[in-house]
Length: 283
Ligand code: F3S
Image (cartoon, rainbow, N blue to C red):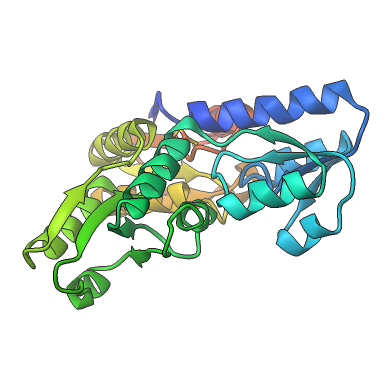
């Protein structure tokens, strides 16, 4: 049986950078170390860091209770209010926001100050989108579905600045933008989907097209893994979503000639390797 592993599977540049920064801080030791939200959507890594003394703060309220230590902002980024709060509480800040996300913060900050209405194509409850909204002067409109795009109306004379969540599906983004732009509004469209996501999605689709079965590895809550699954499922009916090797039962895969493997941006390399070895040996 042939096994094709996506070259783009696993940690992207931004996630690797963030995880490295946390390990770096943990190594230094000293004052308590916190990450604002789990550093990545991977329970195993978060647990390992916990054992090294890194604690996870779940929300603003918990941050308000702190009076010492280092707070690490993860690659998703946060709104301006969280930076302010960290400063007010006298805490040390380590900013691991992915530079691609920081770029979006700067765009929406500038354009909203210039009077534009910010439209974010993305998932409203995703922390990255929360963070982006936190840099818009008068809030933002978040659109995730065709239905919402069709319903959307701007005020007369209003100018729009449309950006995207970095991990959004490229084709879906183009489709939603087209629906909005057909309404004739004065819009600046910035496709801020990060190239790592786009390359990963394109490669996943390419492999899924030629494979008889496809395995997508990633955390349950990882939005980019969920998108990868959707993309692969469209090309290959036998697509399976697993978190680790444990989810792959001996009979999960039907007898096939070619299996493809890809993984979300928060999947550590050793998990991908384990799955790859298991598939090669057991099926
Ligand atoms: Fe950054 Fe793109 Fe990864 S935005 S965190 S490099 S998916």
